Image (cartoon, rainbow, N blue to C red; front, top):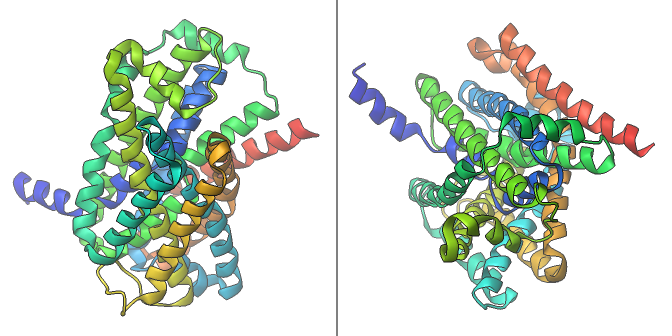
Length: 404
């Protein structure tokens, strides 16, 4: 196949992997990475680097399973392990996704406050637009809109370039780290921000919803790896910005708005605008995808019609689930308007804890020859996925040991 034809096919397939990975750098991601760098310095850059490797492994596994089976993750769990386990996984996903959707609307509320809007107005307007997009726009049009929003992360890359640490900074930060409860919570939160439970469901379902077949697998794999790399670079940049602006000078990072102070040395008076655009793009992107991931999973678990290209009459439960998670996120952000920063960080830690059982199912499915056929895990892929499970287990065991 000629290079031009390959590039055209890659552009046609691109979207699921890139969007899923980039949506990890949402309001919760910005807050968690900035907090991690501000609190523990460059040692958290090492944690982020490890979590990006985990992200690439998990996203490739999700995409490969979707291509091989033609089914979403929730549908496969129901088919292979029964309704009971399927409901258990859906319960985990609902808890994680509603909490994280609250965090996305919290990010939108922060932007509203910066420009003088009351929380109810900024949250309400965003919710109406998001619901309208889901009901009246087709999948490909929405995908283009969301990919455009990914450009909003550019300011963090520029600022991160100016905050690149020396080797001495990294070593010194690692030597100073104390393996206490707050450290393990932060590490779990960073992993949960990077490798989210919802991301595994969304990516696999969107591969199926987009109609990507086995012939396109090399291109969707490239999409996944590109998204993971870009996400990793942005995450590392934010951690370095936080470490340079707060950890290095002994200051505390206690609110999202302080990110403006971290950007100001580079962008001067433009810092507030760039932060606002970046945070809005990140929050809006994830606030659309999170309810969508939940709607995909719930409908798959119950064998119901789903998909953005279907009408409201054809898939009422799909759009109803989307609306339920969206409205729950809006209500949560409004009810907890005075503690938005805490909600954002807590949601990321919950993601890290809830990720482990979901990955266990993913690994079992990837080793199932009846599901995967020729796409079944190789020995190298088996080792990589087991490494991710081991890493998650170590962080959670470390937390338990520190607690007791």
